[in-house]
Length: 172
Image (cartoon, rainbow, N blue to C red; front, side, top):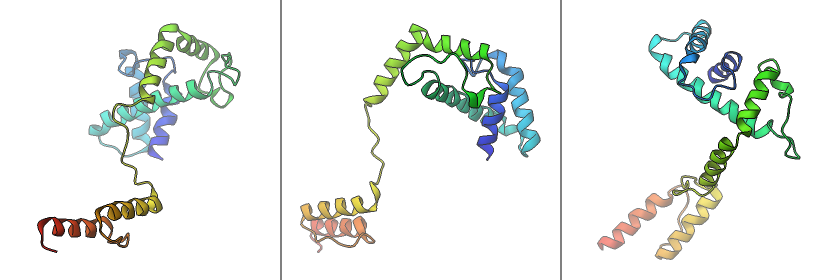
């Protein structure tokens, strides 16, 4: 609820044409955001930088959302009108300025380069546990390769590691 509220306040007070959250022109808008949030939630002054940092991330995410879902229609034509769902936040002039910035060849080149870089990561994400069914299959496969009988998932890898260490040390 807190982050959603920050998002609503940011959409009301910060134009989508602002490219840099650190822009000095945003000082008044940031003060309005902070005062509004302090009015609604009890926060110490020391949390201001955190709240404004979150607000900046939400603003960037909102602009990306607009670009990804509303900037162009299904045929690839640029939408001249702001999305109806956000018409109370975004004026027609603001939308046309946003569209022209996002249609600029320099922006398109940077966006394309970043999209390509993100699609081929140097270090792919590997933290997923694959779900319990696939994890159990992987454990059984790993244990069968090492010659240890498959044991229950509950004891899982920990028990298998103990057995493996004992065998390697010649204890078991």
